[in-house]
Length: 448
Image (cartoon, rainbow, N blue to C red; front, side):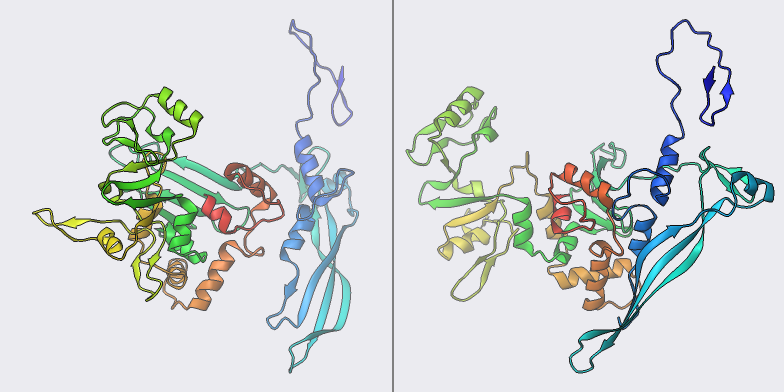
C-alpha cells in the first residue's frame, strides 16, 4: 500500500522482478511551487526583486502624467483569503480565487514656473481592489466556473543570445551563412546575419535588413572606432630600397610556403627562403628564442590592404585616406606609376602606415566590406535610416529617430533582457555585467 499526495490509500501491485529503490516523484511539484512563488502565497522563498506578481507591478509603476506633475507609485499588494473553498466553488459553479488588493501612493507636485523646481504638494495612499486572482488547488488545477481545468505549459524561446547557420540550404553553393539573434524577455528582437557576399546585416524585429555598420553608427561610433573595435592594427614602415618592416607572427606562417624570403629586419638574415616550407620545429625555435620580432617584406606586400586609421595632414587638415580605405598603386601599361592612395601617402612623406591586421584566414574583412557598401557615414543619417525602417511613411527627424532608437534597446520600461538572459549573454560573449543590467549597451552589440 502506498499513499497518494492527497492522503488517500491506493493499492499498488508490482509485478517486476527488480526491487523499487525510489518512490514515485511528485510530478506537479514544479507547477505548484512556481505558482506559489509567483503569488508568494506559500511558505517558500521570497521572490527576488522584479519576479512574481510584485515584479509585474514594478514593471508598470510608477506611472507619470504627461507634465510629470503627478506620480502614481506601487507600494505593496495583498492576497486576501478566498471566500469559498475548492469544494464550495465546484458546487456553486464559481471560480476558486482570492481578492487582490494593491496599495498605491499618489504624489502631486507643485512646479515653480521660473526655476522649474518641483516640490511635493500632496501625498495620498489608498488600497485599490484590482480583481480576483485565480488560485491553484492542491492537485495543480484551477476551478473556473465550477469546472476543474489545467494549464498546459507552452514552450517559448529563452532570452539570451544565440548563434546559428542555415546549414548551407540558402545558397546554391552550400556555403554556410552564419547568424546571431538577441532575444529579450520583453522588447525588440535583434538579428545579425551574413549574406552570400559576406556582408553583415542587422534586422530589428525581423524588418528590412540594414548594414550592421548603420547600427554601429547609430551607437555613436565612427569609422575609426568601428575598425578599432573589430581589428588589430599592424604598422608598415618603409625601408628605402628594401621594402616594408612589419611585425612578425610566426604562428601564421606555420606549414606554409611563403612566396618571398622571410628576412629578419634587424640583422638582414634570411629566415626562410621563398618556396620553402615553414616547419613547426622552426616556428617553435623562433618563439623560444624571441629574437625575431620584425621582418622585411616586399614593397607590393602592402598593396590591397586596408588603412586602420584616418591619416590627416596636420598642417592643412586635409584627409589623405580614411579608416577602411584600400591602399592602391596604379600603373600604366608601361609600368609607370600614375596614382593610387599609397603613392599619395608616400608623396606626402608618410612612411609609417597603420593597416588592419586581416589575413583572410583567422580574420576576414567582413566589417570593412560592410562599411564600404553602407551609404551612411555618421550617426544622424544612420538614425534616420533606422527610423524609416521601423516607422515607414512617417517623416523622420533627428530627435524622433534618436528617441525611437533609445527606446528599442536602452529603455528599461520597454526592453527587458531578464536576469536569465543577462547571465546567458555574459557566458556566451565572455562579459562580466551584473544581472540587474537588463538592457543592452554598446559593448553587448559589438561583442555579438
